[in-house]
Amino acid sequence: LTMFDGRNTLCRQVADDVKTHFPDKVFDAVVPRNVRLSESPSHGLPALLYDPSSKGAQAYAAIAKELIKRLEGSAEAAVETPSTSAAPEPSIDTKEATVTETYTQSSPAPPEASNETSTDTGTAVAAAAAGNATGNVNTEK
Image (tube, rainbow, N blue to C red; front, side):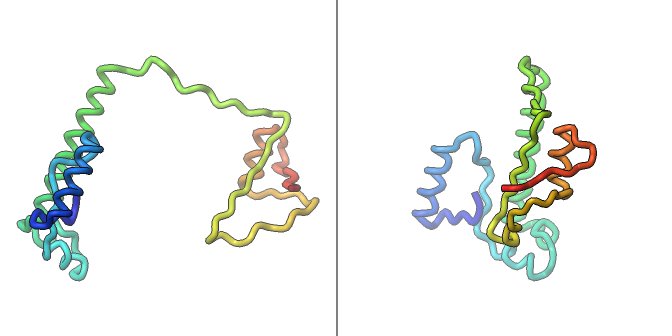
């Protein structure tokens, strides 16, 4: 939890709820509201370099240590109990490859459908999977 202010009742209640619902996900270390943390970006420095003795910087260091312990513990557990089930092998239908183009709001408008072939990276990969050495796939919609 960050920006924690123990003087604020709502903040304490939210912290308790988060710890109740996500006990294994929440770090024990809590980062308090701290002026030095707020000042560090305006000086172009990380909080740990700007004022290493501040409560906020010390809290972030404690989180880092806790994270390292968790990662080391999970790595040791993975070594002790190796998984016996392997991930399934991906299957590719080599007779026909389908290319799906996804456009987000920030992307340019999709091209108009045409009878032309395309050799962009996505279709070239699909063509290679389909066994088409030229990399041309008809993207007609």
